[in-house]
Image 1 (spheres, one colour):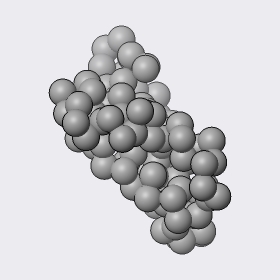
Image 2 (cartoon, rainbow, N blue to C red):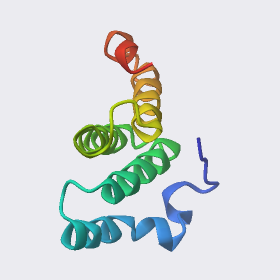
Image 3 (tube, rainbow, N blue to C red):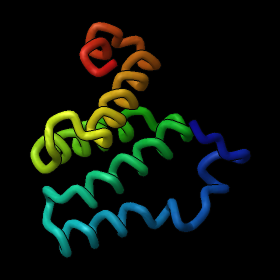
Image 4 (tube, rainbow, N blue to C red):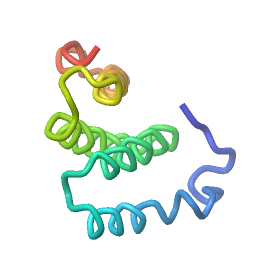
Amino acid sequence: MMTWLGGADCVPSAWRNNPQAIAIRERLFGVNHASLAASLYNLAGFQVGLKQYDDAFTNYQRALRIQNETLVPGHWATARTHYRLGRLLVTLKRRDEAEPHL
């Protein structure tokens, strides 16, 4: 998990621009591309570090949906996203929802 000293005000511009990068990937590759899922996964991890849990949850779920549709069953990226989503749900004290992901 990443922690930035100074919070969101000190976020590097590359991360601040990530939503635009995601929009570009959606236009180039469509809304169900593994490359988009990777970007959503990375953004969610960064959001967890900033304690933006609701946004992270949404992005992990979206990444997982895309991975389930585009990658082979049991793919390592899908397993990794399940794990991170599960850990986030534990952080949010939603343990019953977390268990299937862990």
